Structure formats: C-alpha cells, structure tokens
Image (spheres, rainbow, N blue to C red):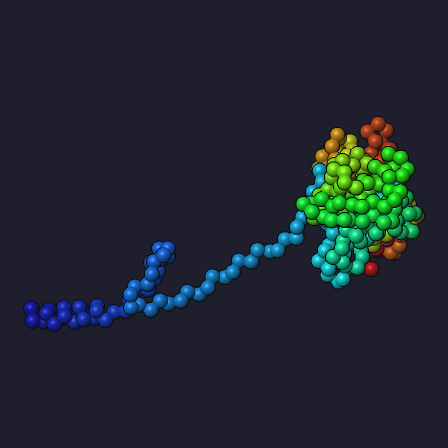
Length: 299
C-alpha cells in the first residue's frame, strides 16, 4: 500500500505544476510602477474619451432681464439679432434674422438706426437712434462709440432714451458688458433699467409665425409677480389663455415664461397679449400686444 501512495503523490504534484494560471485581476498597478524586467507588457485598451460639449459664451446677464442670445453660429448663413426700439417712451425689443457677419455690433447699430419695419411701426415701435453711430473699439468688455453729429440733440430725456437703445442692443453680445459714449464713463443695462415697461415681451416678436402651444417670454415687474397671457384671433376673439409668475414680484423685475395653447380654424393674423390684472378692479393693465401669425393645427 505504501508503494502505491508514493507514485500517486508524485503524480498529484506533477499535475499541480502543469495547471493553468488562475485568471482574475489584482487591481490597478501603483502609480509609477514599471513592468517586471524581462516581461512583455500587455497594452491596455484605451479608455473611451470623455467629450465635454462645447459651450457658447453666455450672453451678458443683466439684473433686469435676460435677452435672447444672438445666434452667432452662422448656420444657414443667418444671425438673429435683438433690437431695442421705443414704444410709448419705453424700451421695447424685437428680433431680426439677418445675413451672418462677424461685425455683429455694426450690423445691430445699422438696423437700429434704420428703424422698425412696417409691421413693427404699426405695433407702435419707433427709433431715436440716428444713422452714423460707430463702434470705435471693443476692449475689456466695453464698446467705445463715436456718436454722429446731432446725437445729443433733443433734450436730456431724448438723449437718455437714445443711449438706452444703443446700450441694451449692444450688450446682448457676450463681448460687450458696457458702452462708453464719446469718452464718458461706461454705462450698462442697469443704468437704464427704469426705461423698461412694467411688462417686456422678448418672444415672440412682431410678425412671427407661432404654433400651439406658443411660448411667451420676457421680464416683468407686476403685482404679486403674476403675468397673464391671452391669444386673440383676427377678429380679436380670445382663443387661448394662461398665466405664470415672474422670478421676482412687486418691487423687483423678474424673468417669466408662459406656455399658451390656442385653437384656430385657419392660419392667419392674430395677437399675443401679455398683461397684468389690476389688483384694484380686475381690469387688464400694462398691456403689451404683439401681432403674430397664428398657425392652425396640422398646417
């Protein structure tokens, strides 16, 4: 029996020495460790690259309202520019889609001086900015302007409103935070925030084609921050209504966004009306009417 155990033990030891190496991982190698001398390092599969999505520089962030950022991507050969005109002695924005250019500040000032379109003029928009306003340079976030002759005419109130148009229009671009007129100290949006209406509508703009539900955006300083919206068809019949609250209420200005569903039988002219309900008698006050084209469902 002892003679049989010895060969059997030898056979077991021999089999153990020929067994394949155990698979598994020992964990990551210490940082800076080098492979054992004479060993061939097995290259690791490269880790998948983590792509950080590119971000467009954010537009200037005024404390009063956030304008629509200009689309400077050049896609389709166009650029969307926001222009600040005047309605009833207050600043009022609209948008234009124009051929793309790198000279966005010059383009905006040219459009501002050209004035509102026929539809915008019918909605009460005007401009106080004359032709010839030029940007001399933009450095450290400040656009220095060379106003043309007559820019300071018309009295203090008219000049201030004219400057406000320029400042609110140019500061939509991320490279401009303030504007310097003829060597004066730079001014920004906050310096003219008192020239905004109680309700400002940044979208949609005059003449836009809208579909249901339509998104209405802007800023407001109204009672209890409540902003009301209704949609009117070509006969002034109410075809949709909604309300929302601004980010800040009475005594401060806040951004708002409302979504309104409407129903019309056929595509045609209509109006987006944004207003405040008077806490005194329930009437509509601080009304802003934006003429648009209402697109019928399925069209």
